Length: 187
Image 1 (cartoon, rainbow, N blue to C red):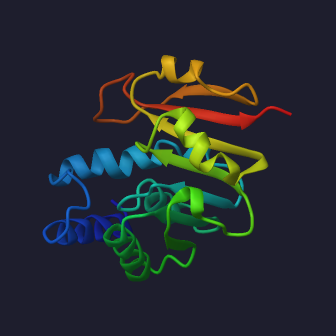
Image 2: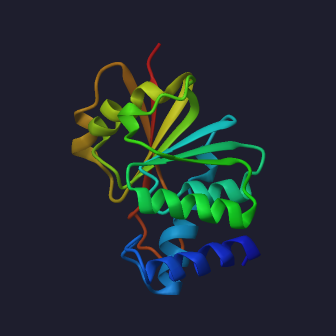
C-alpha cells in the first residue's frame, strides 16, 4: 500500500480514539470502505477543480488527492473536528492540492464553479442538487456515490439534470452495492 495511504489510516485511527470521525474502526474495513471505495470513483472525476461535498473525515477527497496531485480538491464539511482532521492530514502528507473548508455546502462561495462535484453518503440526489448543484460548472459533472441502485431517487430529479448510473466494483464489498450517479446539466 502507498505510504501516504498508510499514514492517512494511521492518523485516522489515532484521531478516532479522541473524536468520532468515522464509525469504522477496523483497519481492514477502513481500507475497503474508505480507501478502495473512494478510489473506485476515480474514472468519473473530470477536470482540474474538484469539490468534495460533506467530506467528513476526507473521503473520497483525500485518497483522490493523493493519486491525483495535478488536480485541486476543495473538501467542505460543517463539522469543525472533521475539517481540522482533513487540514492536519493534508499537512502531514504534503497535499498542497487540498483545501479544507469548514462551511455548509449551500453557503460555500469560492467565486468559481467546479469541473467535478462529488458526494458520498450525504443526502438524496434531489437534496444534493438543492445544496450543491450550483457548484457544478457548465460542462461539469456531479458524481453522487450511492449504495444500491437509487431508482426512486432518480425519478425525483429535476428536468434540467440528466444522469447516467455506473455500477462500481469495490473489492471487499458485495457486488451491486455501490453506484456512481453522474449528473449533468441539460443544455
